[in-house]
Picture (tube, one colour):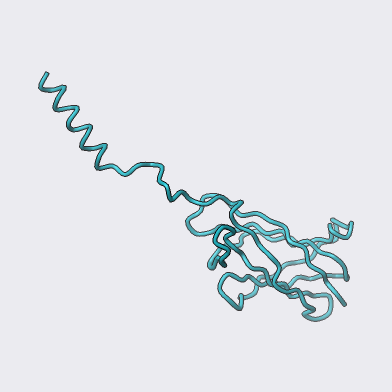
Length: 135
């Protein structure tokens, strides 16, 4: 009987001292973030300088220091998904902005597909934004 009481007391003390696995401040999901185009302007012959901002949607504030590990640019919005362009990351100008120089071989609507990791989030943020490349 004493050992059952002692075991119950120990289990109760450990349970009380252990923080719960689920907290009310749960992490956000990837759907709680979005990229938006800030600017897209010519950067020389057949190149476009594109700046995007990553926002945490519920708070509507920029997210700095995300790690963008996958990029792709193509002309799918113009009906030419096989027309692709190289994407070169550049330093952003403001916190939460991410800049790229994209080789856009022709004018028209382009898609920039991004995959990013946000610090402290388990899910990958994936999105596609569109921009216009002009000559």
